[in-house]
Structures are given as C-alpha cells and as structure tokens.
Image (cartoon, rainbow, N blue to C red; front, top):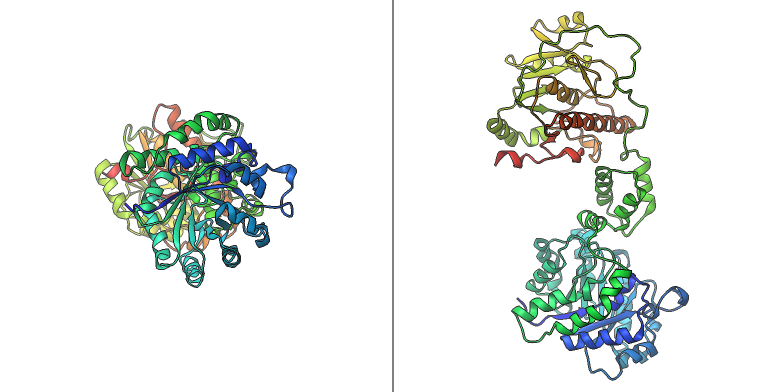
Length: 570
C-alpha cells in the first residue's frame, strides 16, 4: 500500500450541510487542534462564500469562512495545513483574497461535469495568487468513458495541483476503483485525490483500495459526519492506520472530540445509513430522487426501484423534479386503479353453471414451472434446463415456445395466437384450450385431443371456486399460475416473466417477434399493472394456504417476486 498519501479531514465543511455550518468557533478550534494532534495532514475548515450568493442570516460562519473567523480558530496552533472550498458558480476568484495566504494552503472547487472547464480556469487563476488548488469532480460515476477522457485531456495542459474523484452518490464499489483512477495517472504533474461517500457502506473499503491504486490524498470526516449516509469516518481510517501501518497517527484526540462534541451533534442532526441513500448509491443518482419517491408514501419499493432504473438510464446531472414528474405521469409506477376489477364474491351478470373440473389436485404436492415468453426465456435457456433437471417440475407453457422447451401442458386462450401457433405445439405436450375458444373454431385448426382450461373470462379478482378460476388474469402466463394451484401445486416458479415496465419497448417484450403485440404505451403499462395485481393475489393465495409464494427465476420488473435461478441450480 502506498505510504506517501495524505489525509484531508473535511468535517466542518462537509458536515456543515447538516446544521447549515453553525459550529461555534471554540468547537472548530478544538476540532482543528485534535485533528492536528492526530496526524491529519490537511483540515478543510469550511466553504468560502459571500453575501453575493448566500444570505448571512441563513447560514453559520463556516459557509463564508471570513478571514477573521479563520484567524480566531487556527492562530497559535502549529497544526495541519488549512483548506477551504468553493462551489463553482457560487465563488468569485476575488473572494479568495491575498489575506488568506497567511493561513490557507489549499483551495478546492467542486464542480459537476458541465462546470469543470470553467472550474479549471478559475483554479488556475487562484493558483497564481500563491495557493495550491484542487478540482473536485463531482458525480464521477455519471461520467461516460468519453467524458472521463475529455476531463483528462483538459487537465493535461492545466497547472492545477490536485484532481479529485468524488463518489458523490456513494455508488462506487472497490473493484471499480482502479478503472476510475488509472486514466488520471497519466497526469504525472497532478496529484490524485479521492472523496468517498458511504451510501453503500463502502467508503472505508473504497478508500483502502484507492490508496492501493496510488492516490495521493483521501478525504474523511469525524464520526462520518455528512449528509445522508455520511462519509468515511476519520477515526476508522486513523485506527486502521495506527494499528497496521505506521507510527504517524494517533486516533485518541479524535475520539475525544467525538465524545465532547459529535455524539451530541449526531443526536440533534442525525446522519448515517438510510435506505434512500443506499438506493442513491445503487442507481448512481442524486439522493433526492429516491428520497422524494419514498416521501410521497404512495409507491411500493418495486415502483421506486423501477423509477430509479429510468433515472439511471437518463443519467441526469443533479436533481430534477421534472424528471420524476414525467416518470409518474407516464404511468409506469403505481398500482392498478381501484375499481378496475370486481371482487370474487360480487355477483356476476349471469349465473355460471357448475362444472366438474377433471384436473383438480391432479399433481398435488408437485412443483410447477410456468414458461412465459419474455426475452429471458431464451437468454436463460441453459440454466432453465438445469433447473428442470434438478427439480423435476410440472412444466406449463403457452402460445409460442419455438421448441425451446417441451412442456407437460401447452395452453392457449387467445384466438389469434391459437391460430398462429397451434402447429408449433409438441406432440407429447397436453394441449389445453381456454373454454372461451369456440369449439368449431378450434376444429378448423386442429384435430388434436385437448383438455379444457376452465376460467371465467372477465377481469375479476383472482379466486378459485369448484376448480374454476374466477378471472382471466389478463395474461395467460399468470392464468397458468392459477391453474397450477387448481392442480395442487406446492411451489410455483416462473421463467421468462419479464414484465412490461422498465424495459425498452423497441427491443420487444418477447423472445420472438410477436406479430399481434400492441405498441400503445398506455396499454402496455396497464397490462403490467394487471399482471402485478394478479401476481400479488395469487402469491397471497399460496401464502394463505401455508405455502411459499411465487418465485420468478429470471430477471423481471415484477421484482417483489424475483428469486434468481442460481439459488436453485447450484
């Protein structure tokens, strides 16, 4: 591990987001003293700002870090070097006056990728005043490979001293560090820094990996103080280094500062692991996206996950409420509207005759595998075959299977698909046809023996009465899950049930080119919601009878039911 790196503590600056930088001067002085005793190389005291951009009454001292306040804190302590930071676009070059040279060694400017060219120019102007300067490239995971190369090329001709990789959303994993750092190592005249966030609880692991990869400086905060999930705790890094690598560091002064100040601050202004910041890390997006969706209290976690998948694809800079509004208006999240289905015990328009259903409990206690027709059915063919070999389920398929699998039961309840695909049914599969298909039409296309699939062809809530499924369940793959229950299923699995939300309709919803598929986005979203509605009801039916719920084995937008196939083929 590299032994020439530096540690920059940015507690007062980054932690100040929690209390609007309202730390009293005595505390900041004691924190600076403690960090200096602990062996920290650089302490970032605060932001530099002026009333041109910020109202004095809205913020504490360290959003401005005026020279007199800075002097009161550090004077008389022969300690760590001092840094201050500015936000690009909210700091004028003239705000860093020559007076700051007496106390400040390093000036950092944070910029999103659209602001980096201007930030580099501003840093070069500040450097001419005698300061070391650093670019904080925020949201590095939102950069494309080409954009990283563009940034590196800009820096090749720059005179700045440091370029930081900032994991703004806490989304980086340790095995990604080297590929992020390597392009910047071309810049032999510029030192590399790493600023971690703890959204995925990876700040410490990422920092150790960054040091191993050769960065020159890393950031931390006392007690991990920072917005949301917080930052790398200074005391964790110090403890590790003190115990394992060098005699330079002493964590005790920092632990005293935590005991004196930060435990009380954390009680009043809590930070640390939160679900919304984990989601922000997973989807590499601004934390306000998941936070806003959660705060609505209207959407399931599955809805939120689907919405964030869209946000990630859009790769926006910062947070835009308009993006969320567009996702919500598109109808891709949210449940089926109330009143769309009728309860099972509500009266039908016509009484239904009692039918002697022949297949009730025919396969009692067996596992069932439902083959839907999403693209993953073909993509995961080999693994699905392993699942079948290992678990020996009753296999049910519908419509077109292209010879990928030979199901025990092959079903149709759609006239058009029956006409198109009846000739593709394997001769050894039992043909099942919905009782909504007219017998005379059936005989026009096949002379095969078939069994009748009994269900009521209406969009009622799911239920079973005397072996008859009380709804058409909107799609046949979901209907077959109901049939599996009628036949006595112990467990129900599905493959190829990819769903209709979160996928690109231009790529198709089937593993084959479906000639009769709608392209109407509203209808596609409605179908997804119906499927979700009936899946939830069938899952509840299984659970109410003391069995496991539904398990979808291949990737799906019905994520509440997903349990990866790897769990069953090892």
